[in-house]
Image (tube, rainbow, N blue to C red; front, side, top):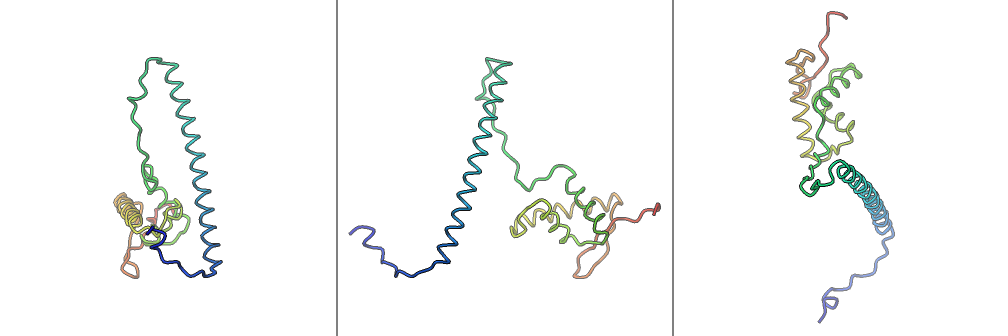
Amino acid sequence: MTTADQIPELPSIDRPNVLSGLMTKRSEIAGLVEGLQDRLREALINLDHIDQTILLFDPEADLTEVKAKPLPPRHVAFKGQVTRSILHMLRTTGDALDSKAITLRLMAERELNAADVRLLKTIQKRVGAALRNLRDRELLVSRQGEKGLLLWSLRATNAE
């Protein structure tokens, strides 16, 4: 008895919506794969150009000793980027915002997936640390808001 004989035959039911959805999803993933292959091809060409340039300056260079530098996760920000984003956000809105709203706006601004719970928690911690740092530097003030969350706003200056 072969494996095909062991699998019961499913009734043939017409499901055009399911098939259409699967075909669309397959098309999206195939396009993503093609795009990634193009980027990989471009990166390999760039790597080859760099290798050739190194060999121009040092023909005896052993390029196998050069270790690959891992890419940081996409959610890693440059130094000060979160702080700058928070200050810009508070300046443009003119309203006090809670840390959750700031976190969600920051994630949207950086095109991060807010449905990813682990990533959301990570970004919330970074936003919280940046907010406390800005308050300690007397750039922001916080006050108790509704729902138990602190509301953050820019500190009023004497020049106003």
